[in-house]
Image 1: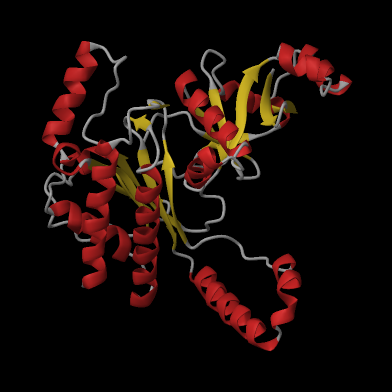
Image 2: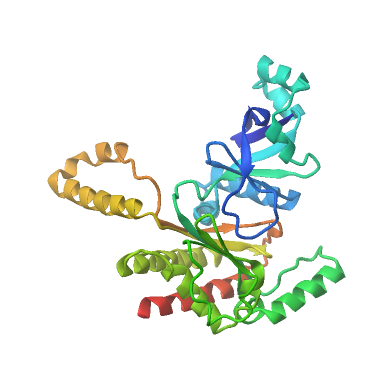
Amino acid sequence: MFTSVVSLGDRPAVFPVSLMKYSKAEHQVAGHDGALVDDTGMVFIKPSTEQEIQFYTQIQAMESSAGDDDNEEALYLTDFLPAFMGTLQHGISEQVEQSQQVTDELRQMHMSQSQSQTASDIDPSIPYLVLENLLYPYKHPSIIDIKLGSVLHDENSSNEKRERLQRVSEETTSGSLHYRVCGMKLYGDKVPDLSKFDNADGHVTCANGYVTFDKWFGRALTKETVLDNFTLFFMYNRLSHEQQQSVVQNIVVKLQLLYNTLIDQELMIRSGSLLFIYENDASRWEAETTFAQTAEDDHHDDDDDDEEDEDDDTHPGPLSQLNMIDFAHAKFTPGQGPDDDILDGIHNLITALETLLQD
């Protein structure tokens, strides 16, 4: 039986995975197969590596000690990461047993031969990360995955992998722009005009209300057509021009904040990605407008009720966001300064998206 060990300070908490139902992650646009979501939609479970788990664990430790001046920047970094909830482990670990948080019911379940049917989707031979599902607040999301950096391998890669990834970098915008579109999914029931893009045939599909662009479409983009791709991503929707500009502006601001955060971090990230998400559901946008107007009216009506207003805030979540994901080849590098490779990619992304705000 699998259990999820979630670190809460020094005491791990446990919940039984075999009691939970899973399904394949619906909107995964890049990365390895095997990602799952639980039946609530709030939890995202992905096959991982020990290095990625160590990275998240270090981030969590830094967040816990964020009161220290030295770790203040690390706290800012967590704002761009999905919340780390723990890892899946096969059976009940010795650490959890000693924590005295395992109930008799859980132990009996562990001894039982009956397993949840959906637990068979989880490979016991590899580690899994349990994370916040970034797509949970969205009804009709559009998503793009952008791999950062021109160097796509780390020092542990084999010579064959180094050479292969070096060729990928040289032949794509990874080399020229320090970023590359790895996948994209747009909410819509019809494939848009793709006449500006070469090699689109066979790499774009339309099904279940979404248009999906695979990694080969992204690899064929050039320094010129990648700008057309961003126009397609942000403008292929039924949002108003004002709403479209609001999404782009929010992403640009988040990119600027992320750049300023990473410039103070001594870490190396190879093949990490940025995830842009925005909402297409008109009712969410209407609710956001109503919420903003109500909040403004309340502020003018009674400035003394701020604390009560915060308690009553039922805002459903952002209409657009930016997150960093995929840290299988990430590590902290004290004394070596920031990762200029990914900083160059973020800088170039800011430059590209700012052109959309000028149109």
